[in-house]
Length: 317
Image (cartoon, rainbow, N blue to C red):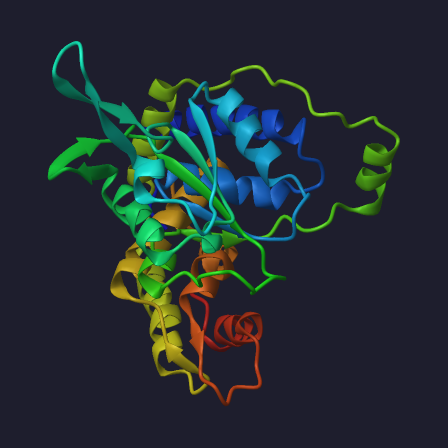
């Protein structure tokens, strides 16, 4: 691994302090989900987006609102339905009779954190309106490109239990999500606290400004990954492309996102370098929603990912 001087460790120590403060703020309202919270912070630092494929009522909205408070950002929530139009998301121009001009009224997409609830319940046309925003952090309205918040961050949800009345997200849309995560049910002791009313959600103090978030994102780019780990990451990626049970593997674009996620994950631990454990920690969240099984496969995607991790030799730690 690369030798790191004392001067070089300072930005990573600062990042570790601020990230620990952010994690502590999130844990005030989301109990017992430390790794999911770490991956959520990782996605934020890596400039990615998150798709929660989860059952209702496990705290996804609370997580989004708590994160918003902690980083002093704007928050919007939109419920996706079959009759939702792109203009309901992006905004619309309305004629002002007093000025004899059209005035653009911004839609909920003009925010920092957008909770896209039940994204798969809206039509492909409206889903596509979100695609440009997630990829380019801009939207095109009436042939004009309008920039979004530089920290624009989508937390989308879809219910895996109900298929009726849904529009499955196409591969291009799924590829824009850095992670697919599940909060799941709380552990017994935490659910007992909830039932006893001792875990009522509460406002959290701001621990990070958007300027400081910019600094942390810059620090992610300074995280070092050794050449042998890049080769290891590539072997994991290539294994998905030749696996007999998969019809679609990891794309080059997703591979770049994989490395970015590993760097951001390493930073959440205060390190300025990536380890094999960092790569393995983010593999399931990065790979799962991008892999497509062949019709004859009797395996689950989780099982295939585990196989690939076990089969590829790990560089010496």
